Amino acid sequence: MKAKIKLAFRIVIDQNSEMIWDKYIFEDTYFEYKIQHQVFDDKEYPVKNYWELLAKNPHAERIPFLLSSAVVNYVSQLNGEIKSLPDVLGNTFFPIENFKLDLISSNLEDSSKHKIGLTFYTPELVLIDIIDNKYLLSKNIDKENGFETFMFAFHPQVAISYYEPVNNS
Image: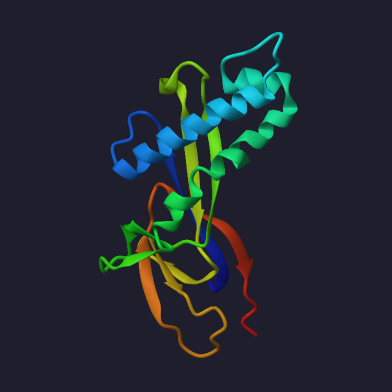
């Protein structure tokens, strides 16, 4: 089962997030949300929450992209790796090359309703096999003979986000 894949890892950040990194992202994205909400809101008939705003002004769908600017510096601090997702040997595994922010909910006056999702994507990896609920992977995409491999256990917040079968002929 040889294929090129990309994995995605998603975290949700809200007011109950405990890691300091998450708390900073929560604060900065909520601050930015309040600014962007006012830009897209109707001055005569204002609304308070994101879903009402989106229903009234379809251009508000750009807000999640605009909130990403508040997160870029935090993601750069990760130096291209999610350290909390080690491989089966305990080595730092999860390389990331980009991310996407989605706005789950927010409210102009109630920060407890602010919730975002961050999805991190790996570069292309080779999926060699799946053994005992573990991915057997390699970072060597273009190798023709033998691969340096690592194994990564299935994780509830990780999914295959891209799959390209490789012809083995």
